Image (cartoon, rainbow, N blue to C red; front, side, top):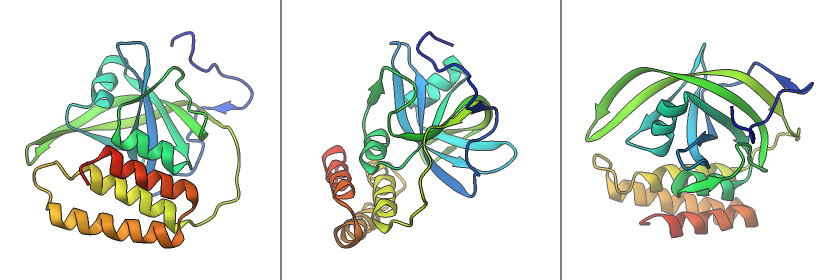
Length: 199
């Protein structure tokens, strides 16, 4: 643990800070060789233990190998999520200001393979410290969901094995949802999707 990592206090625990179900879209920060924390989108699959896959030779994959863990964070800011999903997003501290909750995790690779031309690795995620930073009343936001789907489609536009026309149709649909049902922040996030991808 480095000097700038959070230390345990009365508000921390050693379990996930939220109940996981299905695939939960999160941001993971991992410490890079430059001493900065790389923030990237990570789908966490519920289970005992929880799992995640890294696709390709990403900073997250390399940092998992180097460091053996990182910080999974639960955020509700669509712009922050978009930047983490589609750009090189590095920060000085492991916990993002937008994190409503976080878990410091230890990872272990359990499987690897290839899909098309892309190598993937599967990891188990074990929380060793976690905290809830703020609590909010849950809401269902179609605009935020559309931004998440747009980042997934945009990230696959240049990946062999995916049909580009299908992905572009999905992006157009997501943009329509954000236009009709999204907030200003979600519209800004969709603009970031356009800037950071080939869409």
